[in-house]
Image (tube, rainbow, N blue to C red):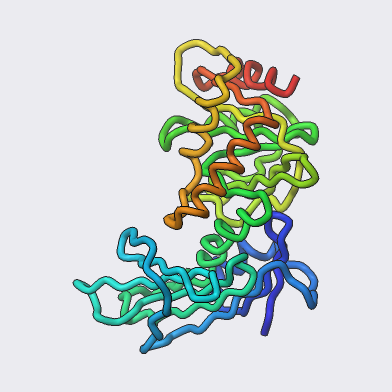
Length: 287
């Protein structure tokens, strides 16, 4: 049975291969069926002999081997020779990441009980498909306040989630859009912030879309201050907050989108502690 989800403004058609955890988090994004989805995913589960995709090798990262196919599309396969001589997962996509076929090996080969692969492969596919629609998935915590979006980025452990939770305490009406992996897209020259069902250990996300008003890069300090950021520094900080594609031409496309976003949306450096004053200082980015 086909299911349809709308995530980041894109309609995804896929099959029902999800466990209860995945179904719960995807439920708020389910949408009506359509004859022309933006992304169509065909999944083969429990394949003991996954065919090796054909193409020209272009990259290898952490035992994932990327290929350029003969029709100018993309493919990858996972094989850990020290673990198994079998292909464990494989994917073949067209050049626009519109039509994708995926193969997953049986769970016993991976020695796992709960299978989340069908859930997380959608995220992996979206990371590439969004590039074709001026969009990115960003490692950040994000919120909406008075119909304005704010995205807070910082290295893990800095306090992004703690800071956005302070908004819930001190700025009534705040909504956490996504606490770990929000989506941002440029549509008709306007950047928007979207919720997405993957949101880290806190699992906080909402299926909403608001205009993105500012990027805020966090640093811990004992006092609070907000200063505009140098454009190039902001570009590299935002680029550092996305998962760079292993494929060179897609990595270049992602950098181009980052540069366009920074040229459109104000970026600030927020040095702060974890107090009400930090919220009040950050709020000036919306003004």
